[in-house]
Image 1 (cartoon, helix red, strand yellow):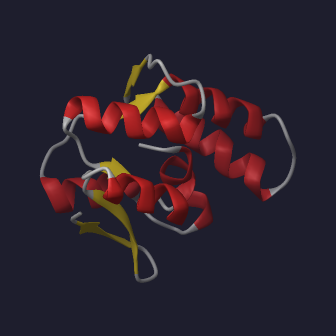
Image 2 (cartoon, helix red, strand yellow):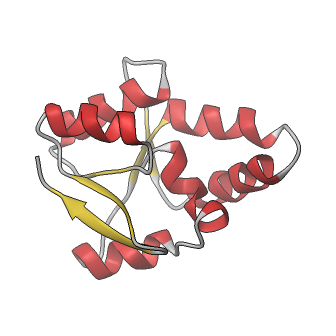
Amino acid sequence: MDTSSLMMPVECGVRVFEELDRLLGEVDPLAPQPVVAELESLASGAGEEATAASVGLDLSKRCDVRETEARYADDAVLELAVAEGAYAVTNDLPLRDRLLDAGVPVIGLRGRNTLAITEP
């Protein structure tokens, strides 16, 4: 799970964990610690982005938060997905491209409020 995926419920109206269950069955979502740190930083602001980050921070409690060597959130998502052989969930197009180039399948927004898998 990256920062954008955990903010999807507010920003895109996506019920992200229900969509993951629909796509993959029951899952044990992972989030790198730098994603949680980024959400904390964004949540301290004001406006819709801060609200979305606050919701994302709450949702991150449903994830197994893992430490990574990488300190930047996008790098940490890539590192964790490769290490775990996992899907990555993101709505960030540059990150999606990096993940696909690294052979990581990506789950992202398709249509208004559903998720779909893109294979590398």
